[in-house]
Length: 249
Image 1: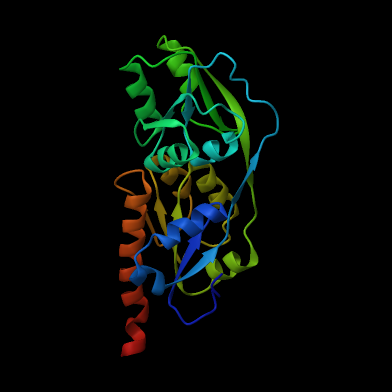
Image 2: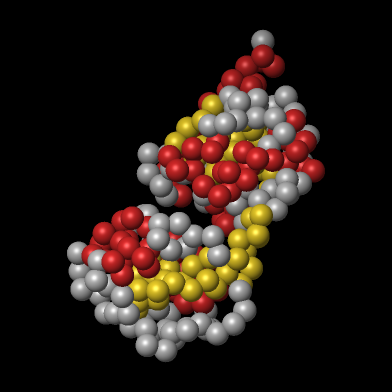
């Protein structure tokens, strides 16, 4: 973990679960990584919900996140098609052994895509305790029997000391935010947003962040990690120049 009190002028505060945050940072261009202090401050912890998965009559699965794939491994037969939200979720399901297929970047994309095809039914949506999109309800209403089952929990966490110090410092801090629930939690507990440059994955993520008196709030052009990484890269380059400018005078 980087020291937020070091000499670099720009911080990068990662609020995702630790493994996801580390993967995102590792995928950033080297120049972007070298220009920021990374502060890992997970605001959510993923925990598998114990118990049997009720998949006895199921003909297909839905995974709306990679966390669902992780929680399903070893608990659900691999000999089923798996319809996924996002490339990362799809890749994870493929690597685990499912016949996975990406159906778009959002739950809305997935629902519309499945409504326009004839997937085998019934379908089981394996999701977290806090879920959005009413996937099972909308598919069932469209004549595609689907039910959901919670197989993992997303427990909210407080801000750590390193994150609080970074937020309260006089340095600029970039904060990429990936989910509406994390955004709302961050808005509720953030002590001071005056030095923060917030980047929201979507307009739904941006909505609760608008309550914060931040330096800047941007929304990704597409709701995916590639678009987020590009915006973090650009923000880091711009802010590094701005924050370092007085030192060179």
